Structures are given as C-alpha cells and as structure tokens.
Image (cartoon, rainbow, N blue to C red; front, side, top):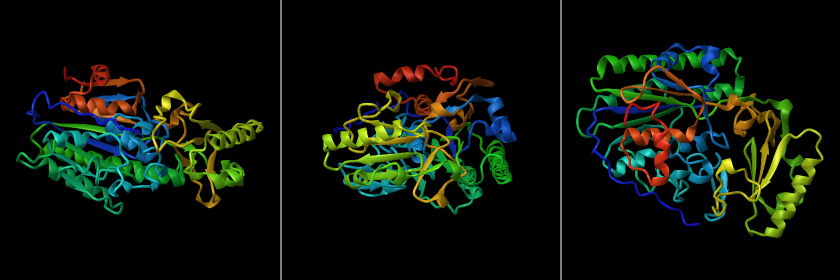
Length: 405
C-alpha cells in the first residue's frame, strides 16, 4: 500500500500566542471513576472548564493504539499501531511496545508534535507511546526515554521546568503520560482500596502541579487531561484458552497474535482459499456455541467503524474479538481482574475522560461523550494548523469547546 503523507500548511500565524498547552494522559482512568471516587482536583478542573460525559476510545481499546489515535486523530487501523503487539506482513516483523525506535516505520500518520516541530514550534514530551523516535525521525525538542520507575513527582517537576523556559525554545506543547491507575485497575479492580489510593494520590499530584503553574508561571496555560480507555470486569472465571478456539491445523498455517481481547491471524502466503477455509471453520465452531463469547471477522466483515484500511500489511486476515467479560489466554495465572480492548458498543465502562481548561477553552460546559479521534482536531485548532479540506469540518464541530474562532 502507498501511504499518503499529510502535508500541512504553515501556521496562519507563527505561534505568536504565549499560551502553552499541556496534554496529560492518565492511562486506564475510566469516566465513572470521577463519580465513584470524586477526585477533588480533577473535578475542580472539570467544573471550571470543558468536560464530556466520556471519551470514547477507538477499537481495539488498547493503550498504544489509543494513545496514537489521541495525537493523530486517526483510528488504529488507519495510523498503523493496531495493537500493543501485532505482525506486519510487509516488514515481516513483529511490533511490540516501543518498536518505533527500531528501523521499521510503524506509525503511518504524523502525531501533533511532529507537525509542530516541522513548523519550528518547540514541543516537549515526558513519556508518550512512540514519542522516542516518532514519525519520520522527527523528534520533539525535549523528550525523555521511557522509564516506568521514574516517580510521578519527577515528571511534574520537569514539566514545570519546561514551562519556566524564557527564550524561543520554550515548548508550546507539553505532553505526558501516567500509568499507575491502569496497572492497579488491571490487578485489583474498581472496588479496590488500592485503586482508590492510587487515584487520590495522582489527583493530589495534579492539584499541586496546577497550583505551581498558578503561582510561578506568568504566561497563560491550557491543560487538557484525557485517558485512553476505562476497564471492564473480566477475571479467570471468564477466560478462554486460546488453544480451545483455534484448531491446530489453523494455528500451523497462520501467524497468531493473542492479546487478551483479540486474536489477530495472518497468513504469510496470502492464500485466499486457505484464509477463507480457516475463517469458515472458526465461524462455524462459534455458531455452535449457545452463548456467544466472541465474534469472528475477516476482511469482508470488519465493521465500518473500525476504519480498516484493507490493503495495509499490518491488517490481519482474521480477527477473533472477545465479547466482555470473556478474555483469551494461554495461562490462567496471567488473567487480569479487569481489562480493556473490547468494542465500546458492549460497555460504557470503557469510556475514558476528557477535561480541558485554560484561555482557549470555554467555561463550565459538560458535553455528551466524544470520540477520542476528536482530541487531535482540537489541538490542531489551538495551534492554527491548516488541515486538509476533508478534515476541516471536524474542527468546526468544536465551537462549543474552544473560544478560538
């Protein structure tokens, strides 16, 4: 497939605004956590600015695919990071966390920081999936190689230091990512005291960061807080062994990637007859089940809302997609109490959060749930990026969110 690279026009103005925009992602923070745990600082930001009743993740509702959707505006099957681990026939290689640092160009669309750097606007990133090499080797002006052991306090301190830069190298976009809520949610679930503690600790840290901005930063600052997905209750009792679903002969003919809520299957010989035979076998076996615990799809039946680019070499020939609370596993000891990855039609618990406040945002408005593909057009409007004609209508839809005309 020939990938079409967006060529964005220069800024309508050369970023004369003194405003810096901060984008923070709280991995795995479900929308319902706001009501359940009432984190006071997040709620204060939500009440003073813009919030939605949920930020709807893209399928598959996994961490890396959705973090790239947030910063490209494209669905995973468009931007290329389709799962936390997958196979690419064209590259004859496997993607896994952080493989963007390798020679293969996995990401097919530029993230927001690449577009800004191309227009000489400095950006800074403290951990974000695939930001260490990014798109076409264009790095942020400031970035950190991922190290999960770095305390959250250190990340906030560095962001504050970037805000204090006084020359032309001061970043106009600062992006950061926090994973603690996701980790606790997976292992202990939504009713866990450990999850409550983790949420309130991060909320306190966000509150202290906002206070530091208000007391030590003169220039105006936009703050956008999002999450990539929520969680659905699963558990060992709802897990299916991968080996009970895929016949041995099918497993021998395909590259099989099992990721908990999806099984991606690739035939490296592109044998259409064999692919169809395997598909029909899997479909027939599933139809015999009285209770549907998963769905089987091929290139002719992928749902339109997945936005699958069928001629892409990273797109599987067959996808088996779990229906919650079912998950797939090869080891029952590795099954999570709660997880994500499912289609959003099955549960609003998968919805994340969107909170935005600052000089470029309207005040005290709560909107209906919004797709996470809409975060990128909001950023593009803030930075006056001229998008292609077929993208401009998406920006116009955000007049309730942004003060910018």
